[in-house]
Length: 177
Image (cartoon, helix red, strand yellow):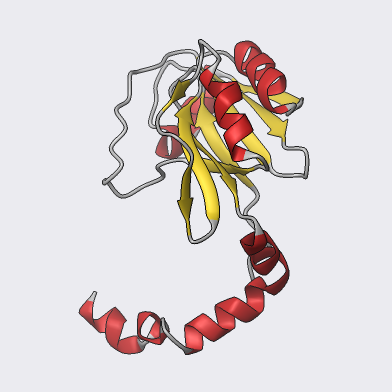
């Protein structure tokens, strides 16, 4: 058995309608489906949602080249704090070109919190910002690395697994953990 790819990233939003409009206005990501789970359906999935007396609406936003962002709107919300250094999901990333132009465009908006100027790491350009609901998003231009990851990713994974990261895969490591 093998995983084919990352299917989608899910985020919680305050309003599906407002988020659909914002993600369309900014990224041209159309809302392609919306469904709802009633309070009873959420209660039946209490091991997953861990909520009572709460319904959920969820939608899918389609990225231009096929990636998906799933948006969740809960009838009852609670404030959350983001801790970067805690285990768990910290952000999601969108592939983009012209990072400096994106940075300027998003910095000019009143509903976006841009967190840093464009950065460069290993030839990749990137920056972080928060959407109107506070979700942490990274825009990245992988430049030549995009080709390497998309076209040569399996080969690179094999070479790294057999080379510099070999110890990460050893059975000795699992005994330590």
